[in-house]
Image (tube, rainbow, N blue to C red; front, side, top):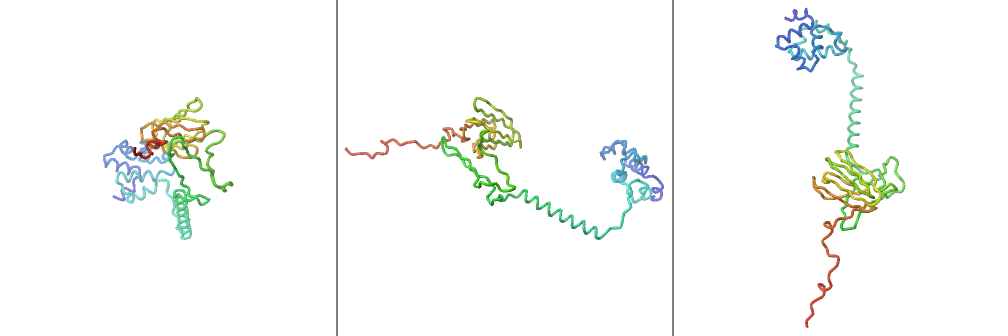
Length: 270
């Protein structure tokens, strides 16, 4: 059996194995995700029509799919273009390759840890930001400024919360949301999408409206706004000319501004 196969070209052997499996060229090409004309060229031993360097890999895929053992047709396999003479292994070269592979792997892991694991900033300060909610009507946050006058080499300085161009407003959404900012009689509307932040500067007092506020992270004048609205609910907030959130009446502390004098006086006996 082996001798007969060796006396036949590899393309004819592959064609015979395909026919024995009951497969047509179209079915086999579809199974292998291979163009039919390329399969036909291999079965016809028309190797110039096969992309250079792909003759043996493609023939090996076909043989594996039709259940052909290439060791049973060594002579036919040796006639397929693309055979490379194997050089004797060099122990020094193999050792050098293993060392380089180990160094590259260790460097990649160290770089990944440095990028992913959160740590302290260059100055030793904790890089995590703080967020505080306002306490009462009319109160607002005061943006925290840098404690250092001189920047550190390599440090990325944050954008100024308020400058001559206006108040810095930054919105980032986890789902689709429409935002509208009204200031100085003008309205700006933007559709927020996932991982597409909306950053702009607004001059003077303004009003911000969101139709799906629960999916939006909002920062005004460098501080985060904790509006406390659930997903799918709208929210509207008013801000003064310094970016301070003016709380609505329903969020104000339920404490009377003054206590009537009649309630504090002790009863007198007549």
